[in-house]
Image (cartoon, rainbow, N blue to C red; front, side):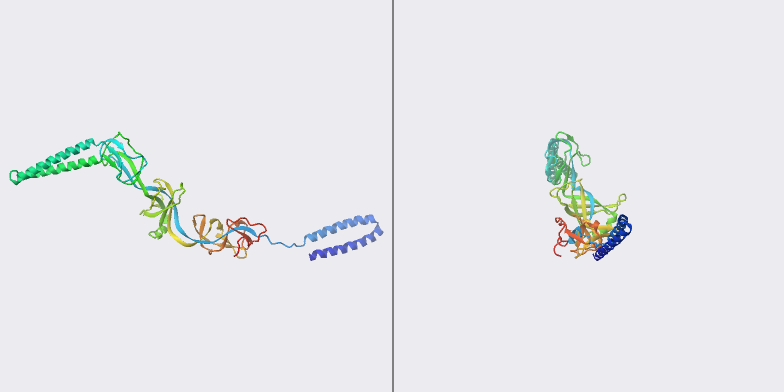
Length: 405
């Protein structure tokens, strides 16, 4: 302002002197010529004055604080894990086969129903097997009478020892035949060998089925899936980490069906294969999980999380807090004077809820920038606004958004 006042005073002096000169020149050369020459001179003087004024440096105002969304670094116990894709497998699966041949006379279950061990499923026409059993029992009774007579005769030395041996052998043979006939008769009533869920029947009432352990007709499949197996694969590159925690108390398997609204089910690691698959470079693994509500079904594709350990007091920030530069990952930390500092960090695993573990570079309770990093540089003043807070008014104090420090 001092320079401007000096210029104004100099301008007034120039104008006064110019008038005096103009009056003298007007009397000597004529007023018209003097006015024309004076106008030209005045034009150049105004131009010079304008340039002088415009060249005066203006006072630069500091830029306003940049609005940013911030949050605090929190601590929490979180898992160290591997995420995989797997499939569910029934813990028991049984194909029901006919052990004796004959005609199916009854079906005693509903397709897809839950069955208990020992529940009747089918009946086969038992009349031929009942007749065979009756015949075998009759023969066994006759052989017992014959054996008793031979024993009485032998006591009086009437018969030979060979006759006793023959009678005893016939009695044992007929008793065994009667027992086999009883087994075949029992096979006419087909019962569930396990607790589980019945599938779709293969044969209907009236069909004739063949029997036998190897060639018997398959009638039905029953599967038990409480608990249930979860089969998945571990990359060979991750096996070193898995072996480090294998057998530890925190090793668990979480199984989550992507198509339901329930949370993941937690079970135990049941099995890890003893060799790497040469084609895929993976190792087979299996978990076993309680499934009382049958959230998981055999053959279903599921998300599997193999939990290896628990990290106590891990430092967490929202994942969008971490930025990447040529020097590596970093975050902007808001200092007490509301200026930002660029801090290099070592990020860890992502956690549920879009949070990220920071292994090194931050302290619990520090304030970090979540959104608005593009307009920032070290030392820039910011107007912090907490996460999920309403927008800060334009005339609000920059420190009021965070409250007291």
